[in-house]
View (cartoon, rainbow, N blue to C red):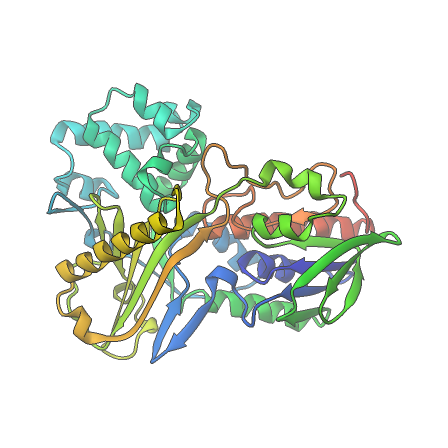
Length: 442
């Protein structure tokens, strides 16, 4: 079986790494950009290692990457963010984020009675009896909940933080999605971790596994421009070649898939996914020549819906000796009447972010060695809210396979990319073992 994987991000690399273990499978991984990793791309500048956006692993011990570690013999170190130094700020008052029982008891965000209520809700989530899973969205649940407004606000803020979305969108996340996500996270012994050395440690090993098989080709800076069915196979066209494959794995955002399949017989089957919106945030990275302040590992501004992570407080490998790497994230809305209105909004978010840096990291401006601002960075290709539809790994009446963070799978963000790619590879591997190169209709 000859397979093409289109997209060299986390999902594409994962699918190719798994498929490279199949002795009767050959393939080509196409990546249109000059580097692998997609939105997990990592690069070094002035001694700092910068990731394109957030790169925390939530619930490491229950995460798909831990399964991959065993199955693909990956080797990586990790370190947990210090929960005692994760803070929320509300109305200029700092308080420990209620991430566990100890912090919940310490926090000033909730009253004693509200803490009891929230603890009961966490217990209900853990034991899988919480009623949230039966509601269409978080908004529907909060509308009927008898909890105090502070408890409702905390639920909303937690969903903002973990799904990287605005409060308005947080209320549109399906109840069963939130319930399943927090059931997994609250049971985790390692809730928030960083892979030491960043995503490059993972992407380099996935690439190596594919290379070592001797049966896979890596086609860098070779985007796929067209696809057609001919002679029982799928012919891909790039600027460099035309090549036929038995099966295709799309490991790229749905928006790009729809563009590639335009004017093909498969275009109509993508219609249900055409209006999907991506999750976008502002990312504000600053590498500092020295540590200007280290009051906490993470500070979330509940009033303005943005946060700053002291990445180097957890992962010292990302900075030169004595340096500090701070990453600010601002949740973004996406409903604007004009480009001028959008620009004004983004300027305002930038100003609020810099004000948060000024407040908690005084002197940072004079210590900047590296600075990068991405005003609209895609965090997730499909925002997991009501009205959007995640792609299945297989779509009925289509012969292709799909994987990525916009597909159905376990978890959110990177975990969905890993889990959907692992699922797609397993289906293809089973077909290869059964000697079924064509699976149209399955």
